[in-house]
Image 1: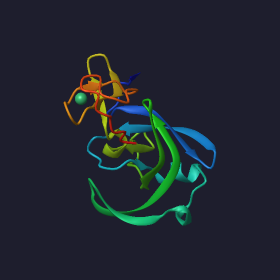
Image 2 (image 1 turned 120 degrees about the vertical axis):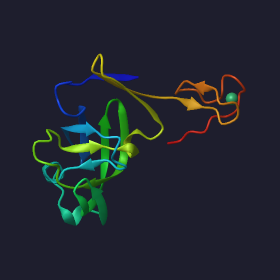
Image 3 (image 1 turned 180 degrees about the vertical axis):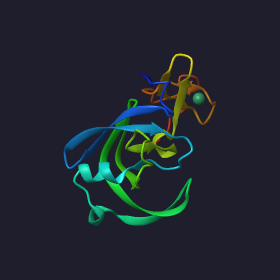
Image 4 (image 1 turned 45 degrees about the vertical axis):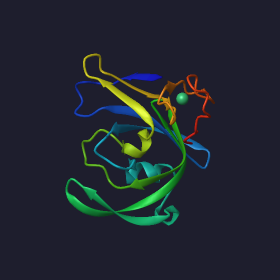
Length: 158
Ligand SMILES: [Zn+2]
């Protein structure tokens, strides 16, 4: 389990995310946003990684708080935050509101299959995985290949 401190004085939960494109790694502050279905990187950060619109794989319509908009979707080699690593992550790029203090949003797709725990008393955020047996619903450790309760082979989700 990875546990990180966040700053309660900020208006959002901001964590550091490593982005890797063409072997170059940079870290950017990202907002943990369970209101966003997809992970988003701002255009400034994607340009800093050496990407332009011609590197995008498609144009996608997105819904923002301000209404509908068009965004570009990219595939980035790796993104890591809070101990979670995603490879060949599809990510949309759109400007972030000025003054947000972040270069992107970690959306629901980033936390798929994980347990996300936010403690507002201690200002700590943690992410961990559980492997539930589809047969007996026992939660197994991440490294388990077979259910410790019923010995059913555990399905690896990724
Ligand atoms: Zn089981």
